[in-house]
Length: 401
Image (cartoon, rainbow, N blue to C red; front, side, top):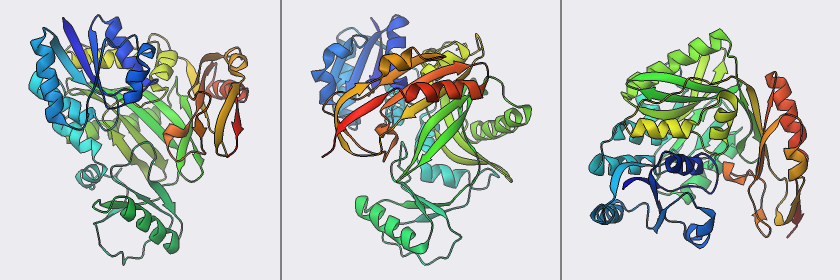
């Protein structure tokens, strides 16, 4: 039987929608997971036909398991991941066991923020950055504010703002103690509106799937709490983003694949915040579906199966997604308002993540966003207003520790 192996998945969001899409396309779905909780909640994953608990950082162990699956009659058509940090690992396994239509080398480089920065350092969209090697003393004077981060950071974890020398030294000590053998990256702080660009490359031809305005909440970390999908993109933004995307695809030599860029628009043009070699997680696939009428994860799977994806919009709608966070720490006793949010004007989807008894905290990463509302409108402003009104209906009742 034809099968697709997934390395890791979340309970919801783009990665989970990918397993559902694979089932819809008629494939047997196999999940390699290192999360024992997923096996304990096996009934919550009916779209995953075979779930295997395994160390997903151990390539040799996964190779042995794949050989066993093949020996039992499965025909593995592709091996994929929609989850950090397994995209590259999945591609390496695909190189050995399937026909890989993407480039493992390009994926590996894009997953490594240090390598990406060095590779693109001469491009006009690359911000100024400095690398601090393990045990290296910092003796330079730079203009504040600065961003201090681990090159292996994902989901806004370990991305810190330093507004003065004392904060810089504090952040460096924190990251050096957390990961003693790791390089630390310091970047200039970029002012300007931030956009997320979802893209797909087919036969070296880049396609912009969606351009999304991001709303950033600044607490202890930079957390994206709002996403506005542009149904109509101003021509100057469209063409200038296309130029950046074409440059990146050409530089990395991407033949086929998906990626997303985070860009800030400055007086000097676009500045690249980061690249990731996959669709964004969370509600992104649902946003694209609401805005343009197709499932990006489904078209991505077709791409990895050697088929031609169809990313032509079926319709164009302004869509805004608003995430809910909490401002204090506590144990969740109950959630109210989900039905009222669902029935609010323009709402197309509502998702509440945590169950009763879960410890909720103010956000230190994207994983600490606890619900979202996706709403549409005749304009982006109307979609945003609809989402903001609806999300206020969702309330988390916490028992403060």
